[in-house]
Length: 236
Image 1 (cartoon, rainbow, N blue to C red):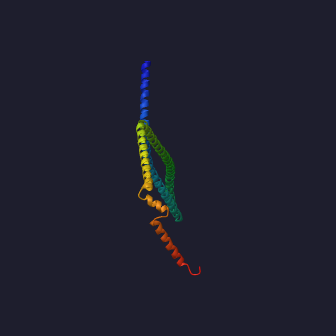
Image 2: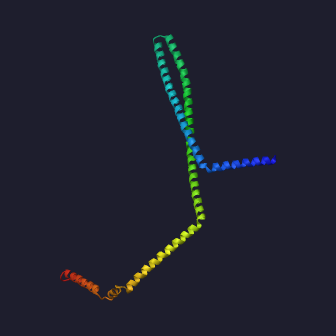
Image 3: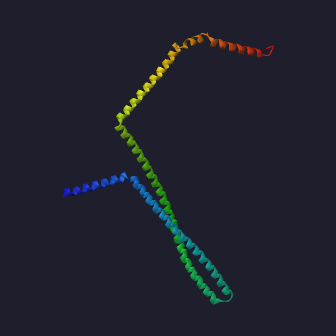
């Protein structure tokens, strides 16, 4: 019996672990659905509250109507007394008494409605604040889960594709060396062209102040100096 009992306990523990793993894997989805359900329930509560508020407004109108009726009948009783209609005045007074009883009942109902409305409003406000807190929590949970999932994906890719990344880096390094070699060759070619090319001799003559370019430059400078000297006023 002890072995069977242990087996049953093991099965129960395994079932609990499986159910917990399923719940944990879908925690944000379940949490979001519960928030949606609570939001719908809150909307229904608001609809119910409007019904209670409507009853409150009806009770307020009835109280005002009864107060007006009492005031009107009291005035009629005064007129009956002024005309020495004692019996009629007493009959009107009885009517006023009935209206006052009805007014008292309506006033009690009105107070109940007002208290209910205030209480329901407070509960709805508290529920909305709690829902906003839950929504923030589930949003943070979703973001955190996404970050963990991305981090795990990167780590897995690096771990599984380490050789591919190494090969890619080696290819990039070879390309960089080829580019550097090409740039060096181009620069060396330019230097050789300057030293041994067709323009090398002209450059040497120009550096020595010999050649048509130097003569042309000197002629231009002489013309500019002459023009400057001719532009000066006499006596300067």
